[in-house]
Length: 589
Image 1 (cartoon, rainbow, N blue to C red):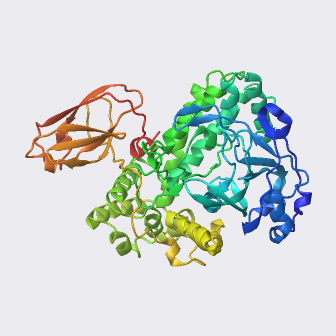
Image 2 (cartoon, rainbow, N blue to C red):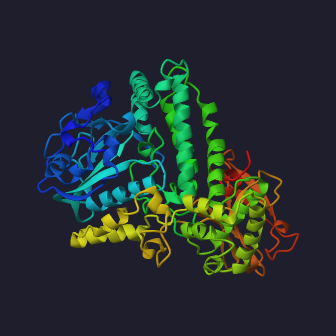
Image 3 (cartoon, rainbow, N blue to C red):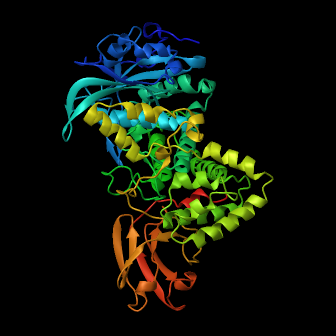
């Protein structure tokens, strides 16, 4: 059914009614030569727009900022946030404008936003523009996650501005037309909390409840229940990130949506090989936002949101609500891993199987996405393709034998299991080298065919199907990913007299065992005649411990090469709060 023209979109603009403390009113800055790079007809119906309008000149002029949009009331939103763990009071929409909220399909409201539309008072001296490179990546990344069934913002269109913007080098400019069910962030509440405006914290919370949880209006405990909703949606979102191997890259609190959608794409990426320490952000040298730390970071960000809401009646202490996060995340992640493996019985045997699998995937250069896709064909075909990527195929054979034992107890045929696994394990992901190829073609040759081609499997059906897709788009990169530090969660087998720890394989250098402590290296001397036989471990300290002195009983490392009586004492003075995938994320609650 055809939708509306752009001049007849159904604007509601509820946010603007909160008052000028929440935003700056500003029109988009016109651009010299707007050009449509790509239009997304799949997103147009979300706001009730007729997809045919994507080919019209009025569409390009309007969303480039050169023509006023009837019903829109453009504004730049105020917010602050914690960036890499440090509070920054001076944020806000420095280069983006919320045109307004539009009611589309089934009465749902979507914020219509221009990213790169010129500087606002929050720009802090910057030009307020976006580069074509970053805009292409967000355009393709958000649509890829939508196709994978992961909650996300959407991209309506990508428009070239005809300008050159300056970053490290001159770059073509662009505007991303973004849709989001909300543009309210954790940092939106932090802004009013830390500027001591509890009344505006309450007004913002009431607005968020009215827009997204109207069933809570009038409830005496609505603010606590609102926080619970945000927490649960965040936990489910991050569980899906982990299951699909997605790395956000910049999980600052100003990049966290209150509706649990993936928000503000920066240096994002997907795992090729399974590397929990991999970070998609080259500036994240400490690995704060590495793949394996995203669940922990989500909890940390929720703690900051809880503090920002602490002035609200009934939300003075949200500690109990925070306690819901890890069990819910654990359960969601376990269920997703079970679905990826085609298993419904998620008991202790499943936990051991999954933990052993993550260890195998880390120790071998196996593509994370393709492994699960090929595993669906087991046992009838595809075993050789799986084994070819393992340095020690016999280790995979042992795992597959355990896997077969768990499959045998499921009351389901191999064909039904295969279909179910193929519905959750995608064949197509936006691999970084493919995104780079699309960007380079656009920058060097003004060739946007790769963008259109990458968008082809944008529906969920196509991302998971074998049809209409070039084989090369499912291949891992020729060279393994770099730029992140690695670590591998292993099932916690060692027996300690102190707090049980999870440990991962590290490396050794001659006569010294290297213990990696979250970026710091501590050297522990070991017997010269046995150092080359020892497989050292990375100790991840539990959050509650400030200082621990451990004795590692080496009899627990059956293949270490040490004698039964040999011991190493390690004194740790640094506090950590990293969760282990196998100890915490796959445990039985």
